[in-house]
Length: 174
Ligand code: S3P
View (cartoon, rainbow, N blue to C red):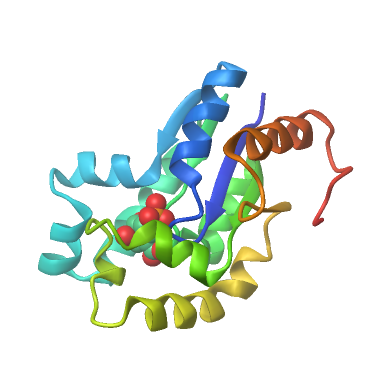
């Protein structure tokens, strides 16, 4: 089975959905953020604060090179991983890339209670979400499939992923 890679902005539900899809399809759940923290033995907040975002992106690319070589994995990719072409190319070598989306308001509601995302620990997270989403939209559009999670239940999103991965390209870019 090819890997299933979930990409998308922070708060689109990648972790929740990837965990459940892995259970349902009896695949392995892999989180790039978890692997980065394990490799670095510090949290993502600590990496950003002490070493900066560029360093974080380097480690992220190394981790993605490793996970691209795995099989039967549902990969929960950090929201910014798509910005490097090499990461996307690595994901696509042995996997189907699915982008989860939701509108700005939904994302803000989902992320505001958490503090583990350094990019959103700012004075005006709503503005930050808007500008990052705008900047990243062309990268997220490179996914093989896009699912808007805003109007769907978790169960419906999972069903769609199962359907997409079982049915090849019939639902491309709905
Ligand atoms: C980031 C998203 C985070 C994490 C880091 C940077 C981003 O992952 O990789 O805080 O640039 O969008 P999630 O999308 O899982 O929150």
